[in-house]
Length: 308
Ligand code: HEM
Ligand SMILES: [Ca+2]
Ligand SMILES: [Ca+2]
Image (tube, rainbow, N blue to C red; front, side):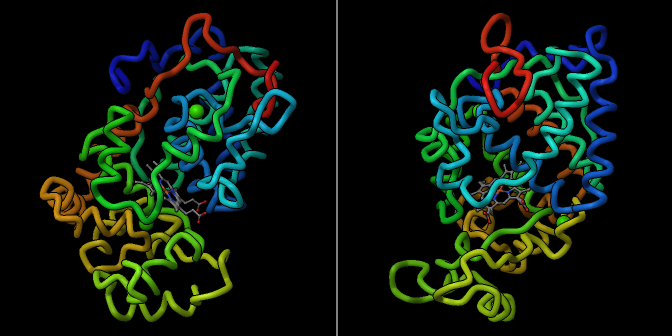
C-alpha cells in the first residue's frame, strides 16, 4: 500500500557516506542564496518525482533511445527547474562516495533543505531509495494534479498515492514559496466555468492586479508569486486563502470546495503556523515514501540524467 512503511530510514548512509547530508546542504546554501526561487523549484521536483512511479528519480532522466523523458509531460514542460543543482550535488557525492547515494535520495534531501533554508520546518529524511530504470510521460500527465482541479479531483489524486486530506492541505502549503505562470491561472480570470466569467471566489483587488500580469491572450509565461512572501516558508499562503487571494484554483478550493475537512484544516493552519509546520514535515515524509525502489530493484545512477 502506498505511503505505508517503506523500508527507508534516516541513517541509511551512516557508514557508506556520512558526509551525504552535509554535501547536499552546502551546495544548496550557495545555490539558493544566488537564486532564492531554487528552493521552491527543488521542493516541487521531489513532488513531481514521487507522484509518478514513486520517489525513484524518474523525473531526472533525459530523453534517450530508451527513455521518453517526463520533463516533456504537460505539467513539467517549460516549468520544472533545478536540474543543474541536482547535477552539481551528484558530482560532489560521486567524488566522495562513488555509486552510493541515489538521485532519488538527493531529491528528498534537497526538498527538506530547501524548506529549511526558506525558514520552514526541519525533519529527518528517511533514505535508501534507489533510482528507476524507466520513466513514464503518460503517468506524469495522468498522476500529477492540474491547477484547475476541483477539490474532489485533488482528494482523489492524493488518495491514489496514499495521502489523505490532511496531507493534501499541508503539502499544498508548499505554495508558500515560488511562483506560477499565467497559463496556470488564466482560466480563473477570464472563463472559470465556460461562461466567460471570472472565478467569483477571487478577491476583487487581487483579481484586478492579476489581470495586468496575465492578459486574456499572450503573456503565457508571465509569473506571479504563489503567495505574498514567495521566498519565505511561512503560513501566509493559508492566510491568503482565507482572503480569496489564493493564486491557483487548486489552492482556493481547499477552502471554498465545500469539503468540511479541508476547509477546517486551512483555517487551522492560517491561525497556527507551528501546526502547519509540524504537519508539513509529517506529510513530506509520507509523500517521500511513495513506492520507493529498494533492495536490488533499480540502480544507483552515476549521472542522474541517464541510466548506468
Ligand atoms: C495539490 C495539487 C497541486 C497542484 C495542482 C499544483 C500545481 C502547481 C502549478 C500549476 C505550479 C506553477 C507551475 C508553472 O507555473 O509552470 C506550481 C508551482 C509550485 N508547486 Fe505545486 N501544485 C500542487 C501541489 C504541490 C505540492 C504537493 C508541492 C510540494 C510539496 C508543490 C510545490 C510547488 C512549488 C514549490 C511551486 C513553485 C515552483 C517554482 O517557483 O519554481 N506543489 N504548482
Ligand atoms: Ca518518479
Ligand atoms: Ca510564504
